[in-house]
Length: 279
Image (cartoon, rainbow, N blue to C red; front, side, top):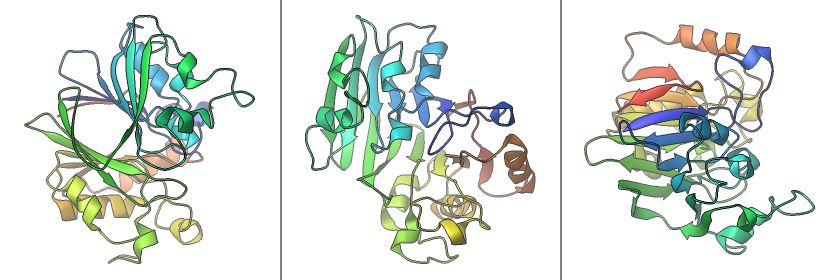
C-alpha cells in the first residue's frame, strides 16, 4: 500500500507562513496500490484537493470513508476536482447513525443557505451510504470499522489491510471520556486495541500535548503520549502523530519531533502534508 498524507490538520485549516512545512489542510489520507491512483480515501477535509493534484486532475473512481461528519472532515467534498467530473465515480460511506440517509446528513452542512449546492449536485456518479461496524471489502482492501469515542456524533476508526500489511486510522479519538487510564489520558480500550493491534502503521489523533491536556480534556481529542502509548501497547511498527492543533506552528511541531527518542519502540513520526509512506 502507498499512503499519501493530503491533509494532517485538525478542527480548522491553518493558513499562513508558520504552517507551511507541515501543512494547514484538514484531514485526508489517500491509499493506493503501488504505482496506481488512489482508490480509497480516509476523510474529506480540505486536504482532499491534494488528491486531485497527485492524480494530475484525472477523474477519481473509488470510495471516500468518513470517520465522522464534522466540518474539518467534509469541507473538501465540493472542491474535489477529480471527483467533480462527469466521468468520476465516487462512493461516500458515513458511519451509520440516526438523522436521515447519508446524503441527508451531509446536506445538513452542504446545502443552501449554508452552501450553494447539495451533495447530489456534484458532477459524476456519486453515491452516499451508511456503514456499519465490522468487516468490509472496499476497493480491494479489507476494512475493519469500529466505533471509537469522540465528541459530537458517531465516529469510526478504521483498519485497512491489503492482505499483507495494514494501517490503523484513528483521526479523532477521545479515550479520556472512558476514564483516566494508566497515564491520565484515557484507557487503551478494546476498540482502539482491536484496530491497532500489530498494524504496520498507526495514524492517530495527537491534537494536544501533555501540558495542554488538563484544560482541554473535554474537547474530544487525544495527546501525543496517548497515541504513542497505544502504539506500544498494541505492538504497531510506526506511530504517525496526526490531526495537529490548528494553532500548532511548524516550529512547535519541530520541537515535538526533537523530543522523540530515536531509539523508541514503536518508531514515531509527525504527519506532514505530501508525506508518502510505502507500507
